[in-house]
Image 1 (tube, rainbow, N blue to C red):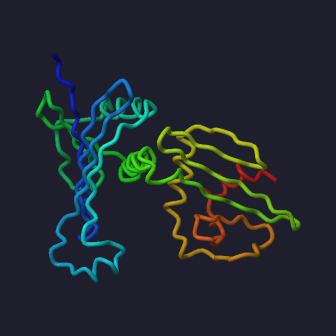
Image 2 (image 1 turned 90 degrees about the vertical axis):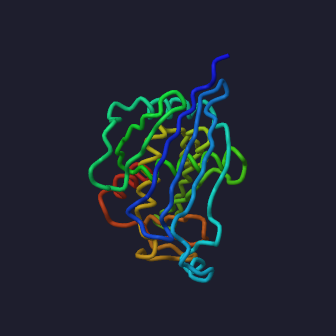
Length: 237
């Protein structure tokens, strides 16, 4: 009987100090149902922090994660493309640049290395897919609203990580757009510091597009080219 080939993908956010520092190991193999995953995230060097200090940073005394899941076939292509990425190399980067993955298998103990942009965001997508599949969390949704001449125009964006589907609901019309476009938009949102934006509870300013991330508040979208491109697509008029 042939044993299933198991891949071990590892990452550590080495440029971050404790208590943010962690090591992540993803063990996966391909099945008829999709991709079977073991997700292990372990925070490092927290011995010198008290419980109060961790809570002040938004952590607890045990933030480690160990969870198993079978992700849908929509993830099969993603992981196959990742393991077959042409830039894997046997040479470990000489400098610690903080976004390098390592990979080895049960059949070959030699380790390969790959440097990717936005690697933490991509790994977070995997975790969100696991939580969605386990029904621990619902699909992520954000609302954007624009008041124009007293009329509210609202758009809902929904990211279904479980099946890598991105939906845009505008005037009760639902459209599915490429996942890669949804990735760009969500990454742009997470790159935005809400604390620096003007915020409103109820009445929105005329002509401004505001975003509601789910906390009951509406934040004015920033005036930059990336946001302008998104808003022109969602609110062409």
